[in-house]
Amino acid sequence: MIGRLLIAMAMLSMLCACGAPRNMFVLLPEEDGSVGQITVSNEHGQQTLTQPWQATGMNSANQAPQVPQEMAPETVKELFQKSLSAQPLPPMHFLLYCTADSVELTEKSKRQIPEILAAIKWRDSVDTSVIGHADTAGSSVYNLALSKRRAQAVGKLLIAQGVNPDILEISSHGERDLLIPTPDNVSEPLNRRVEVTVR
Amino acid sequence: MTRFQVVVLCVTLLGGLFLAQQAVAEEIIGSVKVAQGEATIQRGEQTIDAAPGVRLFPGDTLQTGADGRIGVIFRDDTLLSLGPGSELVIEDFLFSPADNHLSMILRMLHGLAAYVSGKIAKLAPEAVKIETPVGTVGVRGTRMLIRIED
Image (cartoon, rainbow over the protein chains, first blue to last red):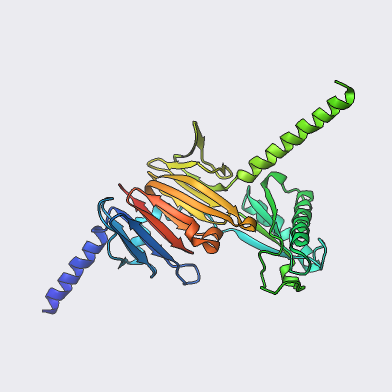
């Protein structure tokens, strides 16, 4: 009896691996173990994946997406090895802070510049963004201009140290993109920042 | 033309050229970080060899041959990599959070893909769509794998 059950389970698991549909969609866990969500839909149906390693798919456009099944991580990694092996490194993020109502970097942030230069070199980056921000003290128009000047100041600093200006994307988000949510007209040092992202 | 008029004309032309360059720089939506074997970018009539450092523009089609692989990173930090025998069109990419212009539409024709979502999916998940011949994928801050053998 148990023997038969085991054989049936073995056959089922074989089916799950080589019976996988030709077209597949698999949800993976995030690096921190959390998981997002994907929805696959066509005119015949829709499925939502919410658990890591869940897969859905169909053999043709005439089929609805199959009921989600959890796959073995090893099987998934094997099937997709050739695309996973070409995955780029995620970007490196740096946060630089400015003193109130100025484009001056804090002493601590000035000391981060060499790290940023090294990252740009190491990653052979051709796409590094420098995004200026402001806290909510002052009008939003004023803060858009201030955050722009902050980004430009950091950009100039990097260029002066040898970074190719062509690789820099310099932009500003004014007071729209607060790191620490605050009401209007609140001085918050952690919002007075320039984010440098090295890709 | 007086000398003054000539000077004004020159300054205007140079200014225009500078602005045009800035506009082109604005349109860059990402770059190639990994490329192996036969890997190309189709841009209109042009076929460009994909190599680390090559920049991407909206409308680019990423293609890999039987031994090719390509890995790219977009301006919003989305990671996308393709295995051999793949073809994917970057239909739309807009990342301008300051004025809420966010959009990412990819059309995967066939092959193997690995995708790690970036800021557009975080700020506006409904603005991210991956179209395939067999169905459309909507995401909510996610890592996923797609195989299309249609």
